Length: 574
Ligand SMILES: Cc1cc2nc3c(=O)[nH]c(=O)nc-3n(C[C@H](O)[C@H](O)[C@H](O)COP(=O)(O)OP(=O)(O)OC[C@H]3O[C@@H](n4cnc5c(N)ncnc54)[C@H](O)[C@@H]3O)c2cc1C
Image (cartoon, rainbow, N blue to C red; front, side):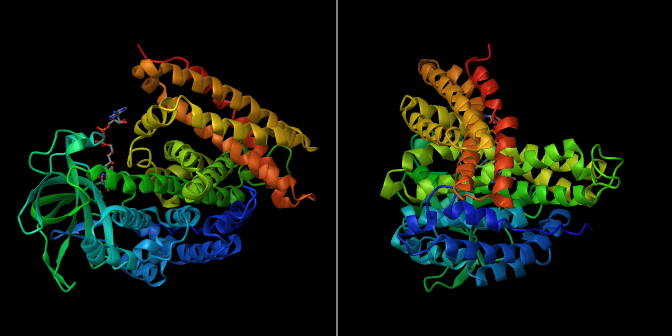
């Protein structure tokens, strides 16, 4: 079996993002001083150490042995249950859960940072964490006191894990087509019948119990998504005194054989008169499920950053030791990392990863401050951009990591191919890129006639202006490129808003438009980093690297905005 590659958590980058890049100590600002950027960096370093030493070594066995269905129950490879036990014992589940649910209430900015390290070290394992955290948020928002007492407390303690059950054979993107039924039994419980497919961590042996959050249709419910209600259905029923009782009537019919994330069991579950408990209002199920789905969308962006960084680290290590022929302009024996094109590949990867990481932190910060500072609409605008753009970028970044390895990248033993395979699902689950893009153009841009996007463009122009007025030539260049791209994005946004009366035009170009805004936001993140680096006065090596990365990104990535703006103007494909 391949040895798992080592993992170095990006603690310095997060320290910079927590307190410098955005001109404030984000943690102090969102916690009212209860926590500072320095505390956040300490937490991040501890999580990184745990991820590197406990989770990363299991990544290869997760891929090569994977989850298996044995006698009707899912078994994870050796080591997963023990890693989960340590994860819980170290307090990582409770740390992120909101205080209202009994957790430690780390702010969303920390969730972004931790989400990256869990996913970089072991994306299959991290899915269990992501789903449990998302379900905690949903139950905290809408569950009754009884459901909170019985289920939420156990989820927050990490003793039980959570899943989301939406998809059925005929209901993927279209949730309105869900056919699973829930019938009242008259004793406060509901009988759930139907088949759910693709349920991540739907069955496993790493925790005592599994709490399924299930969308189902009650008798006489209206057609479509308006007729969906939400239920919790535990794998093992819970007695009145809180102890575990009999198995619920939920059978693991099969687990999927997938392209990647083999360590994450993806289950087909049959509900055959299974016992469920209503969460929220009858026919109001989507509201609660959307709390979870929005959390998962952001979590998938952190997954994209994490998997990309792991692939990048592996590519760097390989390129630094592989020698192949003379390198133009370098002494004999220079490794391939010195070839101009390999440098291009590596800088392309690292500059995009920084853009994704920084945008993840910025969006989390906007959402953290939504109530206090009214930053909610900007945060909401960004969620589909972040999920759609970052997960698509991860496909290209992990592919570049293979390219750096040459033929060895295509060979499984190197281990880098796993990241490419693992990444491929990210633009599909939690709403495909098209669904993110349709949400963006329909609900976030056309609905307010581009007003929120306009606020964003103003902020970007402000950053660009500060750079173009700076005394540093490279920074001025970065600012000028950003300003030009913002102008192109404004034109594209005008086109999208102009498609209000012809939605087929808008939806035909929604993905290019989402990509445009993602690439642009990445450029803005680099510009902010340059601004913070310039403020240091004397330039350290790290500052110089930030400037080089921004210069590269704005020269190699930002020009895509112009091409995408032209595509957006094209409208429907006829
Ligand atoms: C590994 C894995 C894990 C998963 N985990 C879970 C889970 O834990 N819980 C769960 O409930 N589900 C889960 N899913 C299901 C996943 O969310 C769906 O696969 C996804 O939502 C897409 O649905 P679909 O596969 O039916 O594709 P379809 O909906 O059939 O889509 C096929 C294509 O059509 C496009 N399309 C469909 N509708 C539209 C539209 N309105 N506008 C534009 N384009 C459209 C899509 O973008 C896509 O390109 C998982 C899937 C996988 C593979």
